Length: 271
Image 1 (cartoon, rainbow, N blue to C red):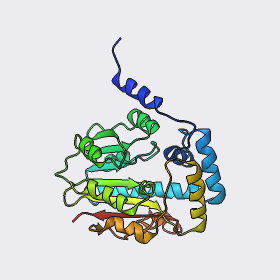
Image 2 (image 1 turned 135 degrees about the vertical axis):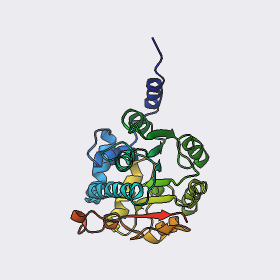
Image 3 (image 1 turned 90 degrees about the horizontal axis):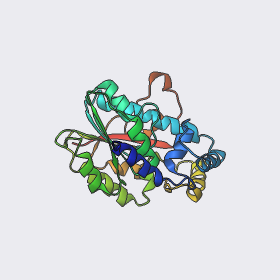
């Protein structure tokens, strides 16, 4: 019988899966209505919601920002390459689906180190035939590996959009987070972009909910003020409307009156 490398790799990833410890990707999958989660993930998700009932809405509006940002980048900004670090579990409107619906030739590299994410990514995140989709098993802190593996698919002599959605909060130290961004953006040419959203400390309920999260889930999450998030874009040109709540970044016309929430976001262009 012929060997199936993809199947062997999936089995290897699943062998790393620990269903006894709640994981960020699976909790978000639960909040977004997915089925790729376990009882421990749902338990933490429910406990967080008890303290912060808007958690599910915050997750959904953050995901909607990702979709709008990718449409902007592939459309108005003309980006054809995306490096999506901290992919999470596949849901509706993934980065490659949105980008390739605008420009089928877009090339996307997803990066994550969660074994369940990688299994699902290889099975579900298939590319449009005119484009390319690839997957890298790496921690975002290992920027050398991320860049090395991404360069197999992406041309760093042409603009790239670096997507870091909801993951920089897993880095406690601001300097380390900025260093990760700098390492990943440095080899990218002028005209590349950085897109980020993350949680802020503006709401006491969110601060308490994050404490509940950090007592149980892995990895822990660290809230920042909008001012601290803004520092991630030092040296970049912010796209209008700048750093704002995810509900206020170029909202769809029928969502223009949605109130701001605690997730803040921005898109910046490398000069």
